[in-house]
Image (cartoon, rainbow, N blue to C red; front, side, top):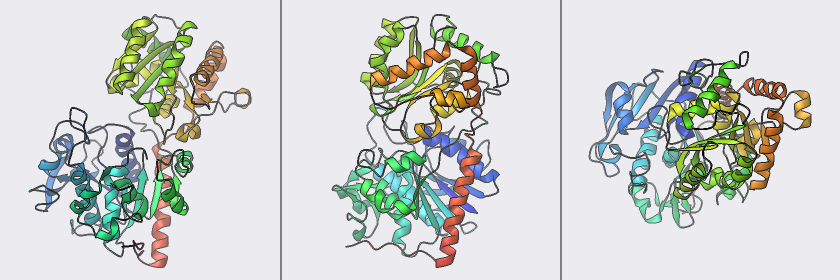
Length: 497
């Protein structure tokens, strides 16, 4: 199949979260299974600088506030997959993140920056921009690319199949309703049956309403977002699309995350030979200024510091954990109050708590390899990648039973320990007491080294490959194309005036 994947970030060129990891791995996995895959990416400086052999496909002229817009085609470094770069310096050639200025405020023209990405995706998919190539499926990722589905729908008869993936429903791409005129869409689409959301304009809703298939990144999260608790106001829209919404678990890029080959580790290891993991723990303790205690349960956290991630629960539980001899290494950034609180905890517990504010990819690998337990206590979690890395590295995940965490970690209760299915520790209530109870269970199992290593090996045996996920996406695309072939091009759903 000919597949166009559209997103705002991609590892290792531009990364703010798990979306970049998905885009760095899923297209390659699909190509490895025989599909013809191309990407469309915004012309952010790291992307413009890194994509190889760029050639101009088309000059698009003034669009969305930019006087010069070009579509270029090149190759991604490493994978050599074909990639279109949407070069619009006025909109994309900036410092800061893809979405925010260096000071942390959203770029004021994000509505135009990501409308352009969606517009270009739709017209490329319709065969208008590159006469030499047209996809059969357009796959848009998260709100940044969701407008592609609206522009396709505005075409009338949809020229290609469309799939929209929600990576995190909490980030919706909301803009003032008065910005609708900037999009160049029919006025009828700014209604509750279209893009209007509580007197605002919602890019996320564009994907939910107008894609032919909606996916999210775990089966449990697909069920959760259809509820008022987790639907962030869009649960009614998702309920209405229930027959076309599904969840496919993310995978792990084995070329990047493999303890047997990971060059970021001071010592490499495998499930067959775990000696290197002991050395990774010792090196991490030394590097982060922790007491060199092999008998101490070492908790690791690599996370954005936010209320979603439940790290306030860990803060509350930390004094009791430390009193029992537990150690903690945390790397992350985000909420200034959480940053300050964890830094204060490190000062209060020298030798037992170490905190690194910011993000360092190599340290993240060393931290996950050196930890005994990877803690992910999220209030909600669409999929989560950190616990998958923990499984692969034999660093047992300790997670709350939500979203993709519930789908990927089997609690080390008595039954699971007996039948050999245990892979980590799971708790239910969003409370410090529940989290601390799971830590205590982890400490108890950690004292039995033979039992702990059995669970480690079971965790490392889990199939978290992108090959599995890519196969599921491939079957989704095939089913959608078969339906379209049987019925003819799908008409756009009526949108009331």
